[in-house]
Length: 124
Image 1 (cartoon, rainbow, N blue to C red):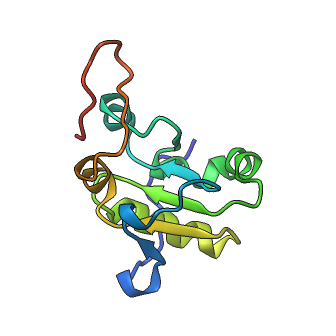
Image 2: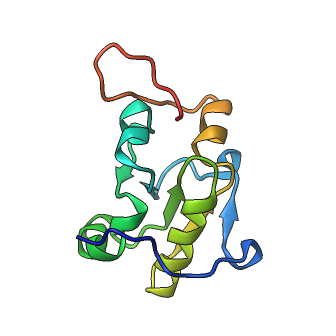
Image 3: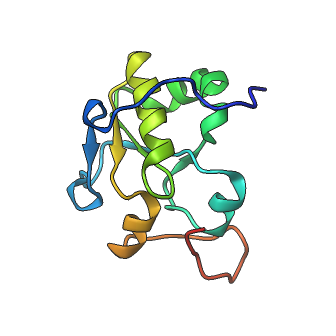
């Protein structure tokens, strides 16, 4: 398994970006690239979790879930997801970074769940 980060230099103006409020109502795959502890604390219920460092080695798994849909990528605040977005776009995906990440997702009042039963979801 890959244990490093994705080696792509990202310039914010080069990465397609959308705000949480601009997300389509459906028809997309939401990819969460945060670490497992962040995911367990709180994530979007419909998101797919692949930590940033694992994206290169799990591309086949991602391909099985995309089905021609655009991929919207989220992390805590937008930095890691920008890297993943650039990587995915370089490999033929239609990927868009979510500005402000899960912090904005939470601020916008979007649904979140925690993995621990009964725990209130939070953004680490």
